Length: 525
Image 1 (cartoon, rainbow, N blue to C red):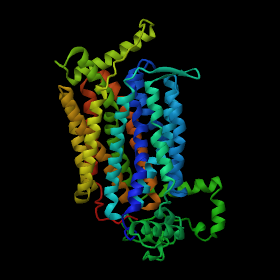
Image 2 (image 1 turned 90 degrees about the vertical axis):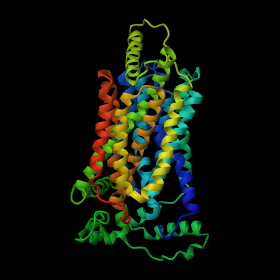
Image 3 (image 1 turned 90 degrees about the horizontal axis):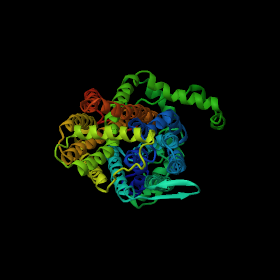
Image 4 (image 1 turned 120 degrees about the horizontal axis):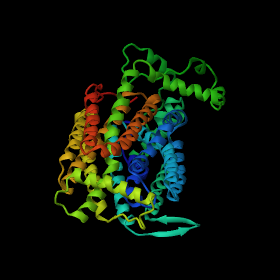
């Protein structure tokens, strides 16, 4: 990729990837914004809110291995297009939901579909950039996610405070359902724009399709250099499928250069015969096992376990706080409108929010409440915009320093600071201080999450890269589910437990990151 250069192709690719990245953020975050608005319509309990935040990640876990296998054997581009475009159906289905069970089912389906595009998009963008730019591209992905985090509260600000109530084909619709329907737009744009780009040449080479890979390199070179494709200096590519076994047997090979071994019986078969066998389910299942097996043995086993545990801890803390922030700010705004700012500590507001949700649910159950009303004002979402803007600034800063200090150091610093800010929320005494602390914590947690993915890309070869990212994200999503379910449970126990929980998991990730290999000088394979 270094020879193909960096230019027009890469800029166009980044533009096309922007709505795709936003779609990922939107899919995992929409529930956190509609909870205050839909509390009465769906008769939500505190546990329901946690489950709605977590259910998307449950769907993602269900399909993690499937997507990882499909992406590393069938290609990046096709799965990106299929994933984003098919997600539109489940998003619109969620927008038509009339009760909490229907909404959970459609959010689970959306999570099942969107698991793949996230991991695949990360590998796809990284493989289309050389060593010089790959760390910055990962941080650029973080900037794209921040743009999504900014756009989401802006849309919420313009839609959710409105008292819309209408019927279409016998279905009742409110403002929060319109908000969900609008959230399908990024998936539509992402899937459409990415269809104009080529397959990853690194994937093509890992499959022995060197002629196709060379044509992709030539096309990228021509767009970036404004020269004819025939001027591309490389005329022949290394056959990675033949060299894989030699590399894996080399005693001096490093973790980042060992490629998975192609089964010997497949190497000696004609290409046409292999292509016919690829269609058989048993062969596909065997290929999936052959791809997963290197991660279950040395030298990858210990390293992959560390990556899984770190991603679990980081996303446990990061996504728990991030997804409960809109509810927290809505509660702060409502509390200050009713009781003023005097004595408005975080503990007081959390106690008010817990008691109010339980009261609403009890009165609706006993049919004693004639009309349930929830106060949702534009001010409820302004603090969320502030947090998102801070994340964007943080990612921009991280993009400049990542090549200087490395992803490993950035991961350690980010998780440590995020954990410190989590416990700092306990001492918050105003909406302003809460906004500042949350902004720092969410920003540093997001940077940590992107840093561990960047390190994973560096530590594992092409044939295992999407699989390891998918598995790492699967463990991270398990953490997200546990965090979003445990957070309301800990809230009901008291003010201190939820913040201690978040600090503990983030600091655990920081300690583990100190034992990762240094990836700054590794060559992407």
